[in-house]
Image (tube, rainbow, N blue to C red):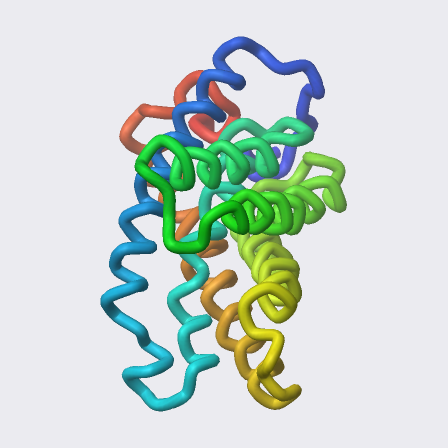
Amino acid sequence: MTSAIRSTSIRYRTLDLVTIAMLGVAFGVVFWGWGKFYDVIDLGAAVGFKPAAGLLAGMWLIAGVVGGLVVRRPGAAFATEMVAAMVSMFVLGGTAWGGTVLLSGIVQGLGAELIFALFLYRRFDVVAAMLAGTLAAVFACFYEWYFYWPDWDLQWRLAYLGFFTVSGVVIAGLGGWLLVRRLAQAGALDSFPAGRP
């Protein structure tokens, strides 16, 4: 049996909770920085097609994917994404999007969490990671249609969904899985199943 597919305990250790908090804080700082970058580099405006901005949105989904892959307990993906959203909103002086950041964290974390739950918290390979990034992107996209882009027509909404989903698969899913592998190779995850061969 590989480290990617194995049974998972439901009981949390103190280390699991601390890790969720630490990952959430680290990704909250990343989210805040990515928001500043996102404000400066408006990809949609740069290419003349606003929905193309979805190609950069996958970064905001990575906390849930990584949290789920590392901690491997029910609720870990959701909790990590929520902590990251709260940190980016409160601790670092807020974001341009205000309180909607917390709602984003809820829907994004829920999307990633549902994939790990679908696999009964037994599969943590690249496929599970990419599916988690995908569903997080789909949930986030539907949410953003309502809160950020209510005036877009169906063609633009579907284009945004496509771009956002690609970003979720590549940045959050594949990128999150690669990050966890690098952390495991560096010995940072020796206390977790993700760090064992």
